[in-house]
Length: 341
Figure 1 (cartoon, helix red, strand yellow):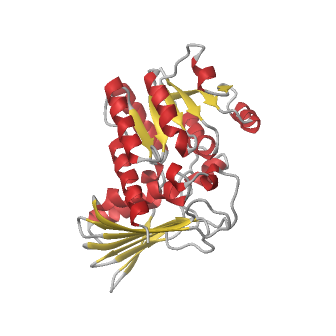
Figure 2: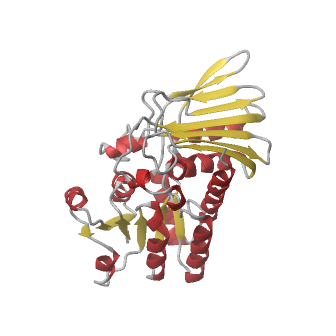
Figure 3: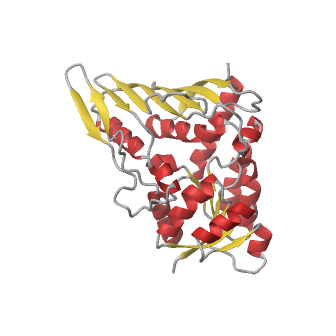
C-alpha cells in the first residue's frame, strides 16, 4: 500500500520540490496539500486533482484521515510548531531544511520524535546534486591527493528586496541567505571533510532595506585540516565556480548549478531521460601539472531521498538524512552569526 502523504505549504519548496517528487514515486500517494493562498489553492488543485486541498492543519486532521507522512515546506519560523503537532498526531515528518531557526529547538524536536516513536528527517536534497556526487567520488577516489581547500559557491542576481518571507524574516527567525543556502553548503562541506574546528563568517546586507543577510561568506577549518570556503549570495551578477577542490596532486573545478530545481519547476518529471542531466556544463575539469581530464557529472537524483525514506518507513532502516546532522549544521550557522566580522 502506498504511503499516504500530505505536503504542508505550496510555495517554492512544496510546489517545486516535494509535491512533484512524491507524485512521481509509486511508493507514495499525494493525498492532501495544505495552503491558504487562493492562488496556490488553484494551482495545487489544477496540478494534483486527486489531492484534497485544505487551508490549515485543523482542516486536515479534523476529518480523521491522518496521513502516514507529512512534509513541512513552510517558512522557517513555522517548522518546529508544525512538525511537533504532526508528530504528536501520530504522523512521520519530513521538514524542509533548515530543521529550525535555532539549534536548541531542532535538538528538542529530534528528541521529541524519538520519544514518540515517530520518524523525523530533513530534506537536505543537495546531497543528491549530480555535481556534488561527482566531487564526492573524486575526493574519495584519491585522484586529487590530500585535499587542502574546498570552495563552494551558490547564488543568483536579485538586487531588490522581494515579497518572499526569505527577504522579510529577521536572521534570528531563519530569514536571509545564510539560512536559505547555508544549510546546503555547510552540510555538503561536513559530508566531505567532517567536523569543524573553527569558523569565520561575513554576513553582509547589500540591498536597500535589507533586514537580514543577502551576501555572505563562511570559512570552516575542519579537524581534518581541510579549509572550506563557502559563498552564498542573492546579489551575484556573475557566477563563481560551483565547486573548486584543491588537492596536492590536482584541482577539480565545476561550473554551473545542478539542473533539477529548474527542471522540476518546468514540469520535467524524474522518469524523463533528461532529468538531472547537466546540459550546459556536463563535466568537471580535473587539472594536474601534467594532465587535464574532463569527468562527466553524475546525474542529479533528488528522488533518491524519497526512495530511501520509503524503505526506512516500511522496513525500519536508516533515514535518508539523520536529523542530528541537521542540528549540527544549525549549530554551525549560529557559530557563524556569533563569529561574523
